[in-house]
Image 1 (cartoon, rainbow, N blue to C red):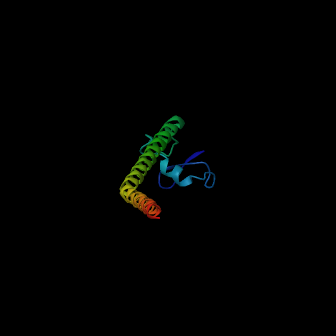
Image 2 (cartoon, rainbow, N blue to C red):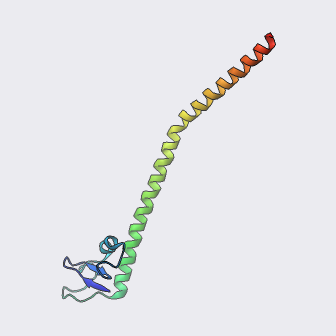
Image 3 (cartoon, one colour):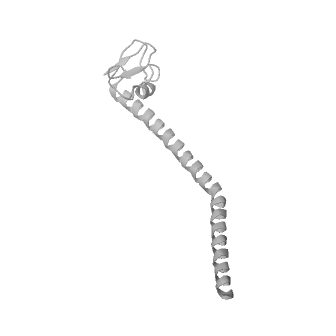
Length: 110
């Protein structure tokens, strides 16, 4: 159910009903935004649903943008680390080739 809180925001369900209560409280429309007069009447249910849907959409887009940014940062970090990995592989390959050539030289001398 919907009801007005002391600070003028709307709240959904009972105090303990939603695991995402903070988010729901954050997403609820204010008295001014709902288009109601200051008489304390409840907003139209369709208006409240639409406003909640819009707030959820905005929050979801914000989270999606943050995740994209984090993936980009992770990719850049991996790219920055590539030269180090390439250097390690080249050193290992050079060491393996050197050992192989030394082994062949020692066989030729024997």
